[in-house]
View 1 (cartoon, rainbow, N blue to C red):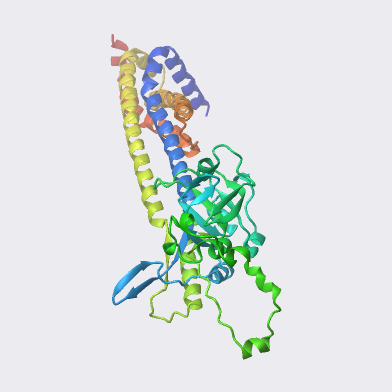
View 2: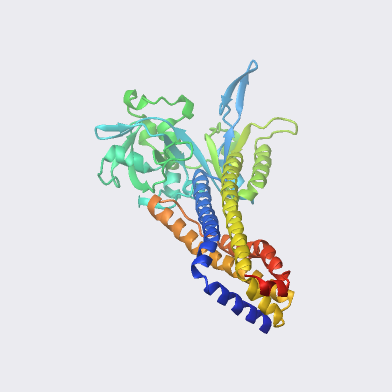
Length: 455
């Protein structure tokens, strides 16, 4: 240990005699390590931003859609078979352990009117409060979300997105105001937090969310495919469905079991357009699909060998593709940075060879007073490693500064990568050993007599 400390002291003294040359020698390592740190951190931040964007679209989300009807061998398209019900959503929530949350969704496409202004939002969705958790939309811009009580009573309340709020209210506070959808008044109780456009360029803030019971029974009354965009302008006032809610049945006494057996009444089939589902994690998506498929096939009485009357869609393929593109770009940047490190290593080898030539008499003198070949080898390798480590430390500071500057000026997300910093130190030491070995070996092989005669 004592000999190692002595060797380190000797190496530092030798480097201190040529401070400027030592600094210029480490410049290649500084640039290389700085490039690695900056690129990795910028790449890490971009990856996090990409993952957040995918998550906002629903990386863990699944969509269950009804099946396809066919007539005479002609397919009618997806969603033409009305097979999904709110009870399906309840059954999935109870029985599927890989499902974190589920919400039935009823869609509509029509005008929204406030005063003398109107707008056709990208989406009008009737759903449940769980939909906000599924889409990571719990943070409200103002107000509060509707509740399960609003859902049960089919209350005419809604939440609107930022885009719709800007288009209809033009700076007015929307909370408490009344908008009309299909001539049905809705009270605005909440404004959703801003989400922005998704990766497909679709505005996620151009949306209305309301209880699905209200949209189903008061607005659309049928599938989205049968709702006309301009029907709000041409339709008359709603009939009794606008005056009485489903709870009007409570005015009549409930029928006894005997009455129900003697005079059975037809049961109305309540369908929804889709089921929006969130799995516990991305890794559990295949398990969630398997569990949901089993539950729905059992509930829909689908026999073995028969085709499903529903289909489940996920974003696994898109996530894998975008993640692969991000990883490819990161590897490309690291390859470019590795070339910089190679250039820096070659520069260190060159300067160390020059140093060996300049210090030939010194090497001969040390050998003459008892230094062994191993001592000379250790000294020059130590000098190379110290140069590279100093360059590595300066490179880390440079890389962190560059990444912070990029994040500040361009607003790009930056992710601090501790493994990259540790790897930079290890790479610096490795470069020092690899490129400093030959000059050190050459110095250790000098003949002491010839070295002392060197001019």
